[in-house]
Image 1 (cartoon, rainbow, N blue to C red):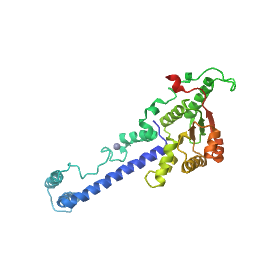
Image 2 (tube, helix red, strand yellow):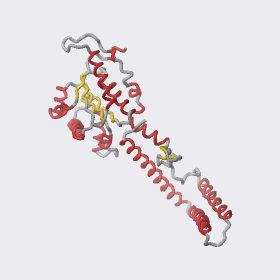
Image 3 (cartoon, rainbow, N blue to C red):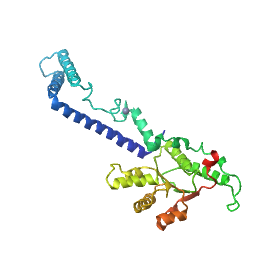
Image 4 (tube, rainbow, N blue to C red):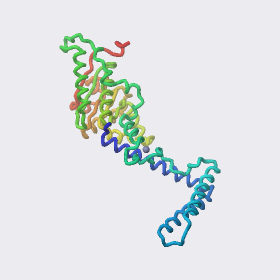
Length: 321
Ligand SMILES: [Zn+2]
C-alpha cells in the first residue's frame, strides 16, 4: 500500500507526539516518586559509578579492577531499584519511559524497517474518523448497483435514469482511478436516497487505497467543530485538518441549522478550497437555486468551477425495501 506524503507527515507528527507524551509522563512520575523515595538517587548513583569504573578500566589508565565485581554491583543496584519501586506499590517498570510501542520506542523504525505500529498508523490516518463506520465499508464502487435506477426513458431528458446514473458511475470510477491533487471538484445534487453519499464514499475508499488522504464530514459537523474552536473549547485545528487532506468531501450541505456563522463558514470553506486548488466534493439535497437563496449568489457562482452531477431517479432505499 502506498501513502501520500501528507499521510507520512501526519504519522511522523503522531509518533513524535507519542514519544513526547511518554517522556513527559516518565519525567512526571519520576519527580513524584523521588519526592517520596529520594533514596532512588543513591541507587542510581551506584549504578552510574559502576558503569563509569568499567569504562575507566577499559581505557587502561586506572588501577586494576575486577570487572565481574563491578558487574555484580551494577546488577545488585538494578535489583535494588526494582524492589524499591515494587515496594512502593508500583509495577517494576513504572519509571521506564512508557512508549506506546516497546519495539521501536515510538520512533516508527525497527531494525531499519517501518515498524508494525507505524504501518498501522498510516492505514488508520488514511481513513480518519470514518475508519470504523459500517457505512464506509459498505460504500464502494463494487456495491453500487445501477440496476435500482429505472430504465424508462425520461421524455424531458431524452434518457433513462439508469443510463444517466451508469454514466455518472463510470465517470466517478475513472475519477477515483486517475485522481491527483489537481483533479477537479464536484457538486452532487439531488434528493435523498439517490446514492450521492454512496458514490462519494466509493471515491473516498478508492483514494485511501491509493494512498491519498480524504477528509469527509457533514456540513453541520464541520460548522460545529469550527464553532467550538472559535470559542476555545477545542484544541484541535479543523483548518489544519482540512488543509492536510488531498480531497475534501462535505456531505449534506444545507441540512445544517441556518445561522450567519454557519453560512459564513461554508462560504469561507468553499472559497479556501478553490483558492488553494484543493479538489472538493460537495453533496446537497438542495438545488442550485435553493443554495443561492441560502448562501448567497457569490457562493453559487464559486460553484461554477465545479462539475455538477445531478442524481436522478427514485429513492433507492425505498425500492430496496
Ligand atoms: Zn513500533
